[in-house]
Length: 378
Image (cartoon, rainbow, N blue to C red; front, side, top):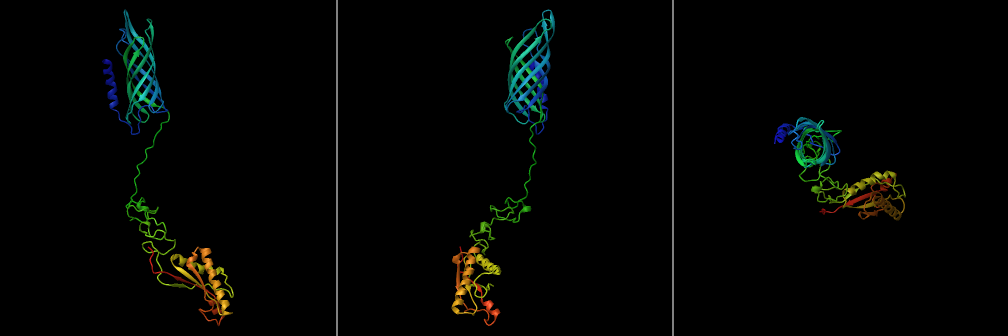
């Protein structure tokens, strides 16, 4: 009883008074060696020779085998009072035990464990005798973290002596130090989420569209997605497949032409020629842009000529000029052929007098007449 009273008087106040570092991890760690230094309290086998308890220094070296298991070798050397008939003195006792420790769960402060093992204890009783005793021991203990490297450690065991066939108490109290570089997880600063008033995932400082309705998909600028690029956001677009460059209303649907529009292109041809020239490219692009802006409109490509030559020949020449423009719009600009029609008017629709060379040049031309419908695409 005196043994346990003395142990509790030392062990409990020391452990309960400690404060613990926030990053501490008590006890052994997998893959790390550790050292224990401390003191033991030992009660030799009761054979009416030894006094009750003995105290002495002890050291242990261990290694973390897994997250749960560790192995350690404990060594201690101390004096035990003995008394023989007619003789008394100090017995020098030393022990070397190999033990396995098993972590039974805990927290960042405490790590309770079980232990089991065995070893050798030798006693030198001066000139009287020397004894060697094989022993087994088992018990429970706990590590109490001090910081990320050091822990207080205490355990209580029952020690079975094979020679005396008895079980005696044993206790160890000390400090455990992990060796080598420790695995440390850096404490990351708590991120403060930037303000996002419309909750679209884009911070207010970067949000180009700060009042996006809840639940609307946005791009990296915080603006609602516009998949067809018509300027109307997807969540408002009732015609989501508008062609690029087309004019649309506030619903995202095509704006339909409601009247016939004529584009007088400056496509003037050489005498007796239906060949397009490089300088025609800019004028043809005007027709392309208009036709793309109104994807449902159709166009009539009108060819004209001056009055030189036979009227029949001029009719055919004007038709070739119209066909040349149609072919260019289809092949070079991907305008659908079913939206285009080529018509030749020969010399019948002059826009200038054929009495001068300048007037004749103006009459050798192509015009584009674009027509729409009054229906509105749904």
